[in-house]
Every structure is written in structure tokens, then in C-alpha cells.
Image 1 (cartoon, rainbow, N blue to C red):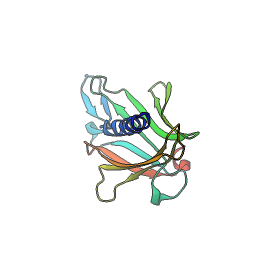
Image 2: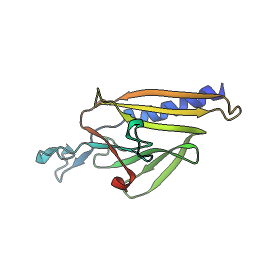
Image 3: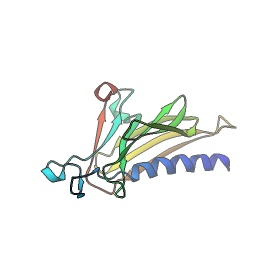
Image 4: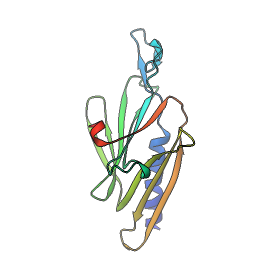
Length: 164
């Protein structure tokens, strides 16, 4: 039972974070809310980065980075990173001031990959293996896709050197 909850929590957190990706907003001096870049005609989408750490583009990226914004606080954005560190799935939030909050979504996670769907630019595929804490022989491979609800998003694969 605990293992099933661990699987559900990990999947729900990743799914919810990716599903909440929306356009980045900004506010002009008059208080008008704009999708970033809309006012001058050069739309700047919310860039979703798939970081290919093992430099094998066929299996996708081992880290994902994107921004969460809300319409209740336009102009504010939080960068979200999901990645593996020391065998744990980590969620890192970085606010506009550079403040970081890290939490472990699930420990004993391996083979984490995020992949663009070549047939649908609004789909991000996710793959990870979760191992039970009590029984290391018990593993579950999770494979699912998250469909984005906005088209003001650009998903790109980059190497760490291109990002950092």
C-alpha cells in the first residue's frame, strides 16, 4: 500500500507541475496584462527545456525546466525544475528574487526521462522507475504523457552546456 501511494504521489506531482505550464505574463505601466511579448508582436512562449545530461537525444532529457505563472500575480514567475539527485526525484522552485526551495518528490527513483512527442508538440512524455523502500526487488516503471493546454509553449531539448 505504501509503495502504491509513493508511485501515485510521484506521478501526480510531475503530471500537475507540467500540466500547470501556461504562457508567461507581464504587466505594463497602465496595469494591462500581456502574454510576454504580445504587445510588440514577437510572442515569447514559456520555454520548456528538456536537459539532455547523458547526451543521448533518443531517450529524451533527464531534467525539465519551465515557469509557472498565475494571473492573480501577473509578471511574477517561478522556475520549476524536476531532476534526479542522489537517486531521488527532486523538485526545485526558484522565485524571481533567486530564492530556492527544494523538496524530494520521491526517493529511490531512476531512469528519469522527459521526451518531446514528435507527433504532438503539446505532449511531453515522462518515464521513470520507482523502487520500493522495503523491497528493492519491487520496481514500477511509470510511462505517461502530459498534454499541455496552451500553445504559447515551446519545448526544446538542450545539452547542459547550452543551458548553464
